[in-house]
Image 1: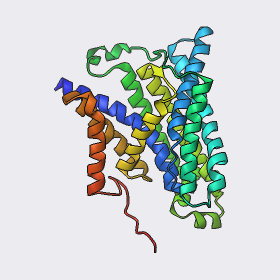
Image 2: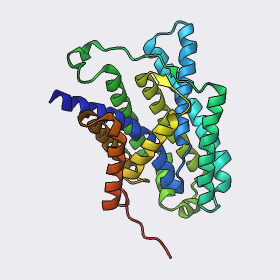
Image 3: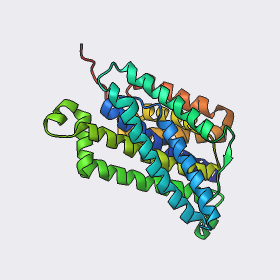
Image 4: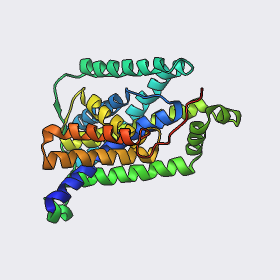
Length: 300
């Protein structure tokens, strides 16, 4: 039973990270029907910024948790700037172009950002310092869940609660929902749609940066390619939950994380991706719009 609980908590940890990144995919798709393939690279840039800031702060004598908080905040700011610029440069000029054009632009930006970090940093894996201390109150259950996993779960939960409150009760959240429902009507009632779309990219980038810092600190290494792998998994989670649905992205991430964890624990870690993508295919066959997605009729 302990082994089952350990796998369950490990799956929740992994799934919560997928959910954080998947929210960026699903929010952008929900508003402008664009699959932002460069979103995984924003996650990777957030991890690299945190890595650099950690190195500088360590030299100046800062300690573990304070380094993590400062590095996380700067990673969020830096990633938000990248997300905002990405929307301005690569997507906004193609707003009225055929849907294939922004999709190709997204793939191009993904490759560009990967190679930019490769040239600016290195192709090697870099060691990320372990900044989350082992909490004394976790000692009795340390064999089931560690302090880093607990920090990831709590941070993800708080982030998702704040995102839900933002979308439901703030002015920008209401504008985002109105733009998602009908962009033309939102313009007619005075909503600055361009600003709403930019804010959507900024919020999604902030979530990706949080995920990047947490995962880098948990795994203990960063590399220019980590965004591609995490991006594919998060995109899978978004599709699994029903792309365009915020609750669906969370559920999809958790389902994917739990599937991988149990497959790795009870069968083999070599086949965790096979089971994860097999589940995706099975759910899409039974429910093409995803777990929480809504079926829309195509207009002729």
